[in-house]
Image (cartoon, rainbow, N blue to C red; front, side):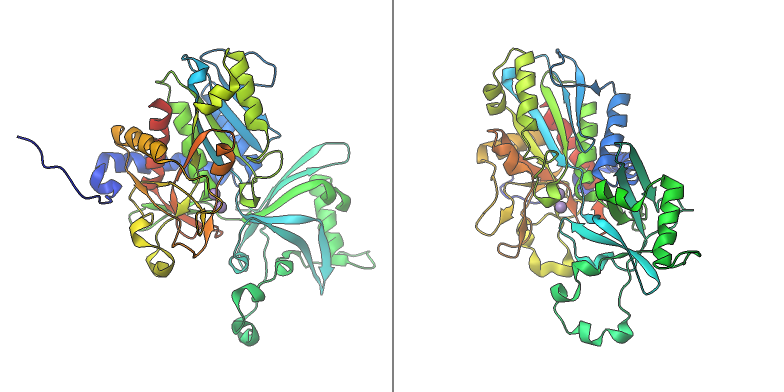
Length: 458
Ligand code: MN
Ligand code: MN
């Protein structure tokens, strides 16, 4: 007696398809993710946290020119802002490397090089936004300052203010509705100017100063607490991020709202899946990169030659040919996509949208209208990934980011593909993407972990 062939395709939820045991595991797994989120709000902090997790699993720092052999678990820390982790397999290196690539930078406000000024009894810090933000979302809420100041002699001074409950927070003022009549009639883009995203940091004047008494109060505080002066801002990377912690959302606690799900919601499962996927002969890599939100430029972004440098070095050390290694490698570009939001249904195409709770999302292509700016994974690669995930029982869905011609977005996929590495986008769906607090589903997060693990081991 033969079973009836299922002729139609239908998306199923993790709850229906994987069952309650997997859902419980997902809730449990999410606890580690929440810790990672709260400890790692910037790319520098994400590198530090990832090193801690990797070292606890036996990974050690590696540098160019140092030997490596099968079984080695290594990481290359690139300037404290991105990190490549890799584990050398026992099979021939020319078989290629299983690579996941996620980013650890998130949209935020960076301080300008000369940020501090005083006006009308208030002292402010000027900012230049980083990545694609909707400016009004950052107003009138508690904000924290994270980053590093490099003093002239090279000494780094780490600064985090606004995370401890006893810390003060930072704040950007907003216009009161009573006086917003003129503003209310204007288009969104004209109303919120980048030069108004000024961080309020003081209003108490100090005695014994002739001018800028409030600003001097701020400088006195910074000098006492951190030993820095105003010109130390010139060589600093200081970021403004939302001050609150990640929280469970919903009576069923099925979701998490937090700053920076994009793309830590893929970085964390990539990292933990690589560490946990020990039952394999493949060489594996996990790339956690910087600068994705601003175009992947710079020495810590995906467009840097570091990826080819590291693959060259591995190929050489393991007696392979670097070009062959790249040609036979596969990469999951692990980045978020937009979850279908019924409140804004008109920007999605429901049949090809990522649905909450339906597992990890694969995007064959990203980019925008007419498939511009995408590496577009081949049907062969999608077929391979499909077999890999289905054999491991992973719940997954395929999607596009919104309706054609409504907008679009890119990932690091095309920069990996440039190196002749077969690359496909896969990641977790996010609601309110790029907002100060984004939202994800715990079961979708867990299916990303299970997908990455299946990929490393398949
Ligand atoms: Mn992203
Ligand atoms: Mn993004």
